[in-house]
Length: 406
Image (cartoon, rainbow, N blue to C red; front, side):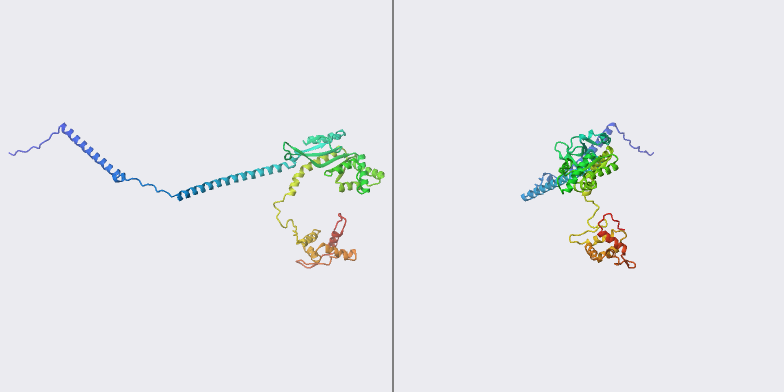
């Protein structure tokens, strides 16, 4: 009988389990220590590299140091110049803005509605005693215009002043305008007319009339005499007859002499309403004058140097005078450029044409002097004709400024 061998069964005790766990932990510890050693070997530099000293910096020469300093100085100067240039540019821009602002303010102050605020109407106290002066004062007040009652150099006169701030250091200054209006009664005007007649007859003798003496002494004033009449036309005619019968002179001659030689205008007004209208008209005219003078004096930006407005430029050597002569003839009615060129080709200057007129024997010959001149045009040839010839003759020889050429 065969005996079977039974397998041997090993029992594991608790102590063996503890031994296995301890051996496993020892293996894990050994592995971690090995890894740490490897890591330390990879990260840590070699001992020879750690102990090697760092290389010393290369010392710069004195020339290099000076060159670096010079470059730094140049960069600093360039920055300062750039900063100064920008500051100058800002200051110039501020100045230009200030100039434009001042110019705009000055131009705005010259507008009539603003300039009226600077004007003051100065009325002589003697005018307040005349009946109807309240019409003038009421009108000035209704317009909000400034007026003052103050003694004037001429009795019964009205003058104007304006404020000029820039002429006074400590405040606003005033400047007298050149306009003067003086009211005269018919008898006072007759005295003025008599004095003027004596001046005309005696050829420059000084006037004995107080009014004319005062006006002659103040030559800078533009005087206007307002003669207060009722029913102006009738009274003026009567005043002229009175002067002619009493002094043997023509009143119209006196008025022309005052206007041309003394720059004194005379108006015959009917009552204080017309006096007020004249004062208001002078005030408005004074308010418009500064802006008008500024416009006339300044050059217009759209007017280029050369021919403009169909004009002709005349040089110092006289070049262009023939074109001016041709333009003058073209100003006549129905005179073409071809006709004017024909006349100027035959007579290159007005003086030559006047000499030809003078050499003619009769008036009829002078009128027809240019009639047979041939005008060369694009179409058939034609003549200047007697009509245009007569008009050119009248234009150059007539002494009457109101003569109708056609």
